[in-house]
Each structure stands twice: as C-alpha cells, then as structure tokens.
Amino acid sequence: MSTITRLAVYCGSAPGGDVRFADVARATGEAMAARGIDLVYGGGKLGLMGIVADTVIAGGGRTYGVIPEALVVLELDELFEAWSWNALGYHAKPFCLVDVGGFWAKMTDFLDHAAACGFLSPARRAQLLVAATPEEAIEKLDEAAKTASQAMVW
Image: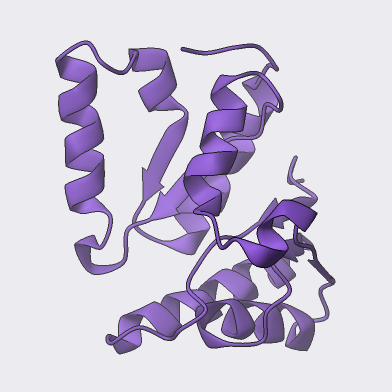
C-alpha cells in the first residue's frame, strides 16, 4: 500500500523537443493511476502537464488543478519555490526529479558541487531526490514520505 495518496507534479507546459519527455509524462500518469495516486498540478491542458493529467484521468484517477493566487500573474519557478518552502519548514513533502535523458544532470551536479563546497547542507541536498523512471520516483517519494518531518532544514 502506498503512503502517498496525492502527488504534485511539476513539468513543462510545452512538450519539449524530445519524444522521451512525452513518453515519461505518459508513464508518470499511468504509474500514478495504477497506484491510485491523485494528481495535483497547475491545472493546465498544454504540453507535458496536459499529458500527465489526461493519462491519470484515462486511467481512472483524479486530478486537482490548483494555482496559488500569487502565481496567476507571475510565472514563478514552482520547483524551487516549493523546495525552499520545504527547507523553511512550511511543509515536509519530499521532491524527486525524473531525469529524462540527463535533463536534470547539470543542475544536480551543480547542487552536489554546492554541497561539497559547503554552500548547501547535505540534509538540504538530500531533500531533492533523483530517479530514472516515474516508478522509481514514486518508490523514492513513498519511502521519503514515511520519514519526513516538518522542520527547518538549512
């Protein structure tokens, strides 16, 4: 039984230039629907977000489209905003990047470098998980959710 009942997914409102992105978006929706995990997302119908949402719905799952009022006008980077809220103790939800074709590799290499140089604590860096597939991401999130605690992590 999965600990996770709802999963917030952040991905592009465009399909990207590589078909693997759309394939993984579909696989994410399929994995969520198969496990009975509801989708929480920005509510868009376009691009990768639309593919995830349509796939969850087609698999019998539920979707919840939400957007904070502050983001209606400004298109902020939700991943880093939510990860920062996690560090500040506003919530204890784990994060996992699905690294399709090495898309996140340069960023995670930089974060590892920042941690090695002492500008990012190991605990803070560990809050951002990385997986190769949607299924692996859900497994990692499920495990992390079991031990997550709401406290400031700097």
